[in-house]
Structures are given as C-alpha cells and as structure tokens.
Image 1 (tube, rainbow, N blue to C red):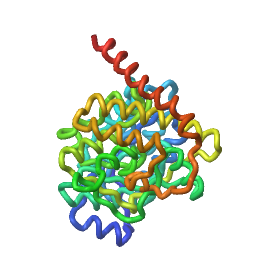
Image 2: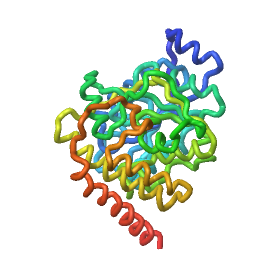
Image 3: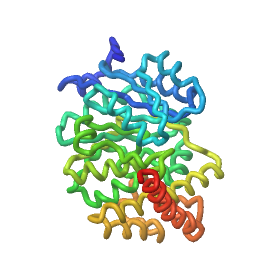
Length: 331
C-alpha cells in the first residue's frame, strides 16, 4: 500500500531529500483485532510517501483480524506456528521494501515515525534504527514505573549511534538499552542475508518467549554494523499502571532475561565471560553506566532481589526445558 500526502513537514522533506526508500511496516498480532485497528489507523496516517503494511496473524484462535487488515489495505498472512520471532520472520520474507519497520499491534506510531526511520538509513553502515516508546496515556509516572519493572521506554532524548566501538556495546544490546521490538527497523537485505532473521525459538509464544530483538541487535553489532537510536521515531504504547500488573511484568521479565542469558552463555561462547558480569550486576543491584540509560535512579523495584532469585532460577530451567522439547521434536 502506498500512502501519498499533499502536505509533508519540512523536517520530513529534509529527511527524504536523499531519496525515498520503500518501507514495509510489519505488524504481528494474535487475536487482538480491536488493538490492531488502532495501530493500523496510526500507520496509514504516516507522513511518508512510500510504504506497505503487512499483518501477520500468528496462531489465531478467533477471527476478525483479516477483515481489519483488509479494511486498511494491508497484506494479510496467517502463520499457524506460534511464536513472535517466527511471525516477524514471515513478515520480513513477504516484504518488498528496502526497510523493515516493526511495531506491536497495540502500539501506535506518531505521524513522523516512518520519515524519521527512513532518514537514518542514509548511512550504509546503519543496519537497524530504534526509537522511543512513550506511554499512550502521556503519564510520565507510568513510563517510569514501567521502566523500573524492566520495560523499555523513552531513553535518551538525543540521537545515539551504537557500534562495536561504543563502550559496553554488549551490555547495551542485551539490556534493552538500544531499543525494543515495539519500535525497531532493519535494512532488509542485511537483516535477511547477513543476520538470517530472528532466532525462531525466541519471542512471545515461542519456546524461549523473549530476547529475539536483543539477539538481533547483538548479532548486527558483532558483524560490524551500526544501530541508530533517533528520538524522532516515536511510538505510543499502553503501559500497565496498577501495582499487580507491574509486578507480574517484572516477574516475567526476570524469567525471560534469565532464560535469554542462559542461551547466550551456552550457545555463544565468545560472550561467555561477559554474561556472568551482567547477571551479577542485575542480581546484586549494582548500576554500572550501561544500566542507567532510562534515568530511573531512585525508583524502587517491584520485588526484592532475594525474592526474585526463584524467578532467575526458573528462567535457567526454562531454557533447558525448551532445549529438551526442541531436540525431541526434531529427532
């Protein structure tokens, strides 16, 4: 789908001066047609002249998603195998754009989102672009509470470029500090041919549930590419506000982080010495410079470190359970 607008902001015109690149916006969804409609409405309102929208309906149990996608002119695809990373890879293979832009089905990008993303890919060494994620309510306290519970949020207000020359690049890639799957974009050729897409075992609904974007960022930096954070590529996203929901999010985050770190330690041996240092920082409450990106100093955790130990252990076990299930399935 192409969306033409007659009035483009001066900022967007400046970004597009070097040439218009077609962007494929990929939205993966699971039984949430109402949230998807809000998301697609925001996408088709973008002030960018060349893009398509691909909706990947992942392991649906109910209908409604296809009709919403069709109403907004999006390409619809059903992927029956559950797993967010799998669905995101399906969308990437269907895409015809030079740039792949991902947003959650319950997120809604601001009008300049695609223009801001496109402008950052003028450097051929940039393989990925990320942007801030703000609370849809506009409530700053909600954002900070979400971040303190392990979520990703606004981060810096200045543009940042990450590479292997960046101090603590490994820790930044694996802590959510570079960006989040709720707001990320990739150069399609690099993503598919050099990186090979997302690890299909990871992501919500998959055997290991999370970490696919962190592993992708790590892989791109390891290959020598750069990742750009731009504060102009803004996405709004609902954050839980009540303490019980925040606590449950924190618990899930600890389990998923532990599972992901176990994967890094055992499957990526060149990083084996770095993983324990990161784990000790998280478990011990030490806040090194790479952990301060989201500016939440002074905010309490939803749970004490001692009580969270059981969930760190659970994540370790979940990794091995997933490995066992996968090996038995492939045997």
